[in-house]
Structure formats: structure tokens, C-alpha cells
Image (cartoon, rainbow, N blue to C red; front, top):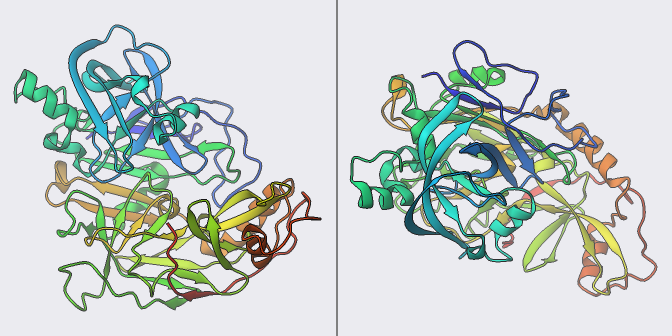
Length: 475
């Protein structure tokens, strides 16, 4: 299948076999380099951008109007909705009303419209259904409204069921109203796959990592072909999807190691055979962190030296030295995938309870939450930024059959720690003072007065931590 390529690497051109799709993105200069610096560019036309390491979005057009939409792989999300500040030109309003709800109790509502959908200049779907969302239906404090404030005016679900017409709420409404043979209501990704019936149906995903959390940066999404930089993924083991958790990209994890020591991690998944020798992990674009069930008390990475547990907002978090050396490796299909230390902590500015002082803090991104009995962990963007991942739906071409996942490591563990120090040192040079975790926890808990603590430059110290295996209930 000749694929639709979304590449945010502007100096690289996909030639001959593919549609070369070049989409507009937002980008601001990065103040520091991370592990894999973005390729040089004097052209702002790219396709996928990263907002604060939280939201990954692509630029699409509907009837000629360019719209940035968040990419959503959460569970079975398969619908496309938009709510741009400008009116979409002359689209067909079917008057079919639909509300799309999310697990956090937020929702969007509007009418199903039909228009010309395009990725770049060459990948065009003449008639594609989408939900035209009424802005008034979006709550002022909802994640969707936050996205609006960041220039993202919609969401494109590319979840596991994207190539299954029965999973799309839009398609269900359309086929009920216009007949079961109507195809323009299916997901836009399924419409792209249908452009060539002989090709394999898969997407390839590489996520960017921001050096500066206030910047935007590049990423890579390819459809039905590999990003040229990661062709070697074709030789990676095919990870079968779990039959116990249908409807999501859930794969077997061989194990997890911390500082070179394998963690004894027994699965708590219901019906998984005792002694199976693996755990089940769901891969989820859109979840910022790595989430493990509260039952996994023997797995959560507990920072032993210079790290302390405290409340941060409504959550409990581990305060970690911002330049801490953390070596965590996940193993899938007999291959190791190191997780960059920049992805294991988040850089934040916190204010003392009396409101007089700001401090720099780094909090762990491996969090705890009660999840379903069908997975042992959810690996979100904190993990996915370290791999090029191919999600094959198993519905077409020479890979037709059972769906599977392939991954290729993109993190060089031998240089990751020096990258961390370079990035964090540059960022923190103009940030408030970083205290030791125990000092900061005492201030946040009100057991130590912040008087005399003022905004400063850089770190008060650089710590190297070792990791033990414990669980904290954090999320």
C-alpha cells in the first residue's frame, strides 16, 4: 500500500513509493538538546507537534481549513471531532447529533458533518464524516478546553478499533440514518487504508521529547509504511496482542530492570496462567505517564536516596533530584528498551504554602492507580518516547491476520545520563532554586518555614540516586 507519510523532519523527503505528506506544525526554538536533537529546519511546514510532552497533534484540513487535532489512542477511541475558531467552509451538516464522552467525565457534543478530509496535498478523502463540536458543550476546565487554549481544536481517535466500522460512534449514527452500506462515516484512518485494498494496515509512531517543557517539538507518524529513519523495525519481533484485553494495544512484557537488576514482577491479571513468565502492558498514546495498579506493590520504583514522598495537588508524588541517574529498562520480545531519565521525572515549579517562595522540583512519572484486572500496567508517552512503534491492525496486505506490535529502541542508554544533565542544567539555570527533596517536602508539608528561601539560579546540588523496588500510591 502506498502510505500517507506524516513527517515532522522537514529536510527529509519520502520519495517514489509513498505519498509525501507535509503538514503545518507549531514550533518554537528549543533551549536545550535532548537525546536525539531535532533535525535542522528553516521551514515551519511539518506534521506532528508535541505540546509540553503531554499532547501530540497532527494538522489536518477539512474543506480547506487547517486544524490541529490531538492524536488519541486511548482504548478504542476511533472518532474525529473538531471545533475550530473559524467556521469550516461549506460542509454538509447531516443534522445528526452526537455526544462523545470520556473516562474523566468530560464530553463534547455537536452535529455530524461531511467534508473533504486531507493530510497534506496528496492524501485526500473526498467525503469524510466528522463531529462538528459546539464550543459551548466543552467544559471550561476540561482537557478539551485546555487544548483549545494551546491551539489544538479537535481530536482524531486512532485507537485499536480504527479499522473496525462497528467501533465508531459517528459511523453507527451514519449507518443507522443512511444505511449499512454507507462508508463515509468510518474513521478517517480506515478511509486512508481503503485507498489501496492490497496494502498492509498499520501506523508507525515516533514521539518527540522536549528539552524545554514550554516549547513545541517534532514527532513522526507514518501510515502503511515505515519512517525511513526506522526501517530496521521490520526485523523486530512481532508482539501478539493479549486475548484477555481485546480492544486495546496490550502486549506481553518480559520484565523490567532497575540499575541492572531484574525486578520480580508477578502478574495480577485475572485468568493469566500462574507462572506465565510475563506481565501485560497496554501501550497508550495520550497517557503522559507510566501507570501501574496499586496492587503492584513489588514493582513501583521507589527512589531510595534523597527522594521523599509528599502531596502535590490532589496526588502523592516522589520528589526526586532533577539530575538523578535513573536506569530503567523494559524488555519486550527478548529485546531491551531503556527509558530515558528525562522521561522518568517531570520538571515543575512549586510554590511554598505561604506563597512567598518558588522552588524547582522534579517528580517521578511512574505513578500508581487502580486499573482494570486485564492489565498489569499502562505504558504511556513516558515510555513511547523511547521507541519507534508499529501498530499493525492485521486487516490488510501481507500482514493480514492477527494484529501485532513491533518496536525499535530509539534511546541510547550510554549517553542518556549526560543528556539529562545537559538539558536539565540549561533549563534550571534560570529557574528557582532546587532544594534537596527532604527540605522541599518539609516546606510543602508546613514543617519548615520558607522564610529566607528566595528564588535562585540553578541547582543547589546534583544527586545520584539508587532505586529499590517498592510501591507508592500516587495517582
